[in-house]
Image: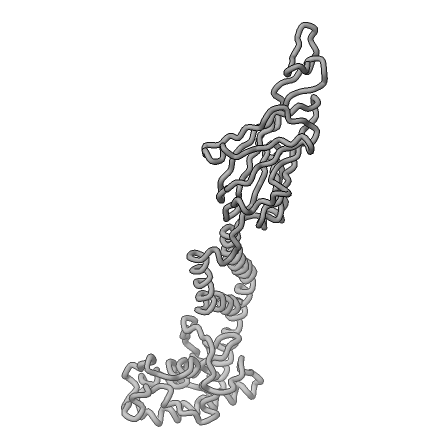
Length: 396
């Protein structure tokens, strides 16, 4: 499981993936408009819709008039409706964007405008926008205007309506670049759906969400795998200890069978066999393969630039200048212990080959297979050198 997680991490954080993410991030910072089209977006937001004058309980001596109209004896009331016209888009609304046949405006439902609308704004230009009441369709319209991105103005209306009757407004009109006029009622608290919460927002917001969800998904995936891998790691640890005990038992049975006294070359072979990983190809397999296929073991323990001149095994090997595979390097690292044994290097290697053949023949006779199957000695693999731990055997 640990190997699987390592492969996933290597893939996700490879140079290619990180390079692509860096390119996307660079473009997102310096060219954010590449990810979304700049266009206006008009919203009509109701900020107030309340009664300001009315009679709930009739009183004999109380009379309320609006002009010539008595309100105290009727079931009518006056409501104040305030709404904002907001450009929430990323581009300005311009004079030429308005359709003169369908001007921007609102319809009043279940009420009647009784006073000229007033515009509330700190911008003198917006205060000068002409608002035209239209009794024909019980509403009002705005003359063409310029409204930059992020700007807004507020319109106040006095509406005569029946007492207890909620008055509603509806945006109308056609503006170039605005698919539809959106309406928001700030006086009513509504909960957005999960879909609206996920997709609503401009290009920059969506870009931030993309990075957040991308890395969040990766981290969550790795976290879940890490949690799931815990029991597998524990199981692997138990199996590895049992497997190591079995290998040590094979070694000591061989020592008893051959009545062996301590021999350094056999000790090198046994330590390599004892410390082989549970499932992956290992130095002992590489050694067996090299012996069976007459591969030059001297080349595995001699630096390339010293192969013809290397007189002994007590010099450090410069693996940086080596062009060997990880498997060959692991075999060579183990065989460097030959330097601690007295004798001619060629004779020691020949004796090593004989000992490997003898021990491996014993394993084969007992039906004890190697863990993996080496196809060729230069085949690479991942091997954790930190797991190598020498042990003493019961020599005769």
